[in-house]
Length: 264
Length: 271
Image (cartoon, each protein chain N blue to C red):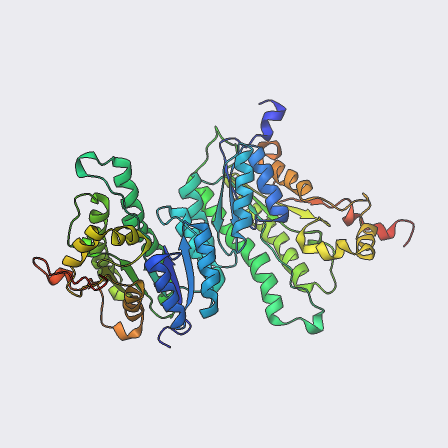
């Protein structure tokens, strides 16, 4: 299997896209540490996913340096190594630009952008040390979004954080290339997670989404997980610094497409 | 300074390794009670370490949990980095993390040997060296303590009493004795105090099975003139004293806290 024997940390791995990635990595032979702030969902995820392989849950807020230290220590204690990091933890906060409270702006940036930096730096330091001792290079994947390119007027921190992640991915890719550590990002479009459920159930909102989605449907978490599995594997050995967009064609589209109402 | 004020650790930061249970946990609690901000280091028992931090915080103290395997150089350096990040410069270090890997000598694997030596003695070296480096970097803060830093090792009565079927453990503790004394000699002129506590039979998970069995319990008590098995707090209080300015003229010493075990009670009326 493509990830046989590798150890992965997936932040925000208790639910949604992170959960799907954890599942796929286990399926591909990796051992997985799920990090999340949601203690209950995290513990459940690790238990549920244990049928596919070795999965552990570690409570961690990626915006806290100490939590990140302890996350890495736990992963090393459990599996003696870390080969793959997926910086997936992220939050949204909806508010118009004119009304946005600075604390809410900061909170989103702390988790989405600073969290990826803290985890990326800590894991990269470990990987570099390992390489110096003759070990193999690992790889890092950041969860960006189509909102690294498109902006949302009422998701200020989120849009800014995802734009930042695109550059963080390039910076890390360049800084870690001399060691052979690859750093890439994934930019999902509209994916069916709990976050999107409410929106997708509202016919008008769903219509808006699909009018900007040439493939005519909302994506599934496993369709993002498969990209993560590819980027984490040796099949992607010549890729670094890239953001791979999986958005049903949205970035290619100028105006809108007609929406098929299959379910009517 | 008034006599009782000398016991205060207010304004100081302490690292306790292997603090998620037993003697380490008791020492962390006592150091916090004396006023120190405490790092509760653990290797794999994160939940226990966090629960202890919660208890300390509930009692008005400050404590954070930091994961690190003391037998790994990178982990120990990371532990001190994270501790300084969170609590500022470190004044007190209790190198406590330890384990037993018991076997009769004929059956003792090299792995058993290495396990005890790398954690108990190797860990003592890594933690002790890093503590001294950080004390030096911090510099003397006379308003906080007349000492540049206080380093305390958790040894054992088995740094003195040979222990059949536990040769690796006894060797590691015997090694700790001269590590401690050599470091004390090397750094005393810099006002770094290095000491050790040597617990006897203390009620912790390490000897739980033996204590639960009545015959085992009586066999233990036969070795203890004071007539009771020690509690982790018996050790924690001595650690807090060694960390305090009340013991400012004490360095290079091992304090046996053992209810008289090292008095060789078998010789009473015999020999």
